[in-house]
Amino acid sequence: MTENARKINKPEAEWKRELTPEQYHITREAGTERPFSHPLNNEKRAGIYKCICCGQPLFSSEAKFDSGTGWPSFFQPMAENAVAEREDRSLFMRRTEVLCSQCDAHLGHVFPDGPKPTGLRYCMNGTALDFQPEGLDEQS
Image (cartoon, rainbow, N blue to C red):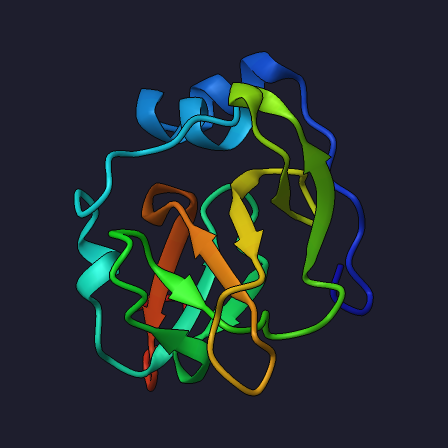
């Protein structure tokens, strides 16, 4: 969670009103979009990737790389406390789930097969992210 940020707790009915059905499924029900299906996978502009649910800055374009997996991938979050992690044993696998630290939105998973300097691959659902190009303020 970023400095001065508060934990966001909303009733599921409120999330359902605020999000599209796909955004709700991905972020609140830990869904996964099809690989290569989201435009942010191919986004090349400089900017910030924020949580679609609460707007918390999560990843910088400077940490984005083409992993070839079909999902936007990053080697580190913008701040160590921007994301939270927890063990995910669904689908008969053992993985590390990545969540927004502010609102607990499911973002994707992190794997130990990324590039230097971290060796990590934060494999995120584009549907869980909102991209703000560099140079545009939030009102644009």
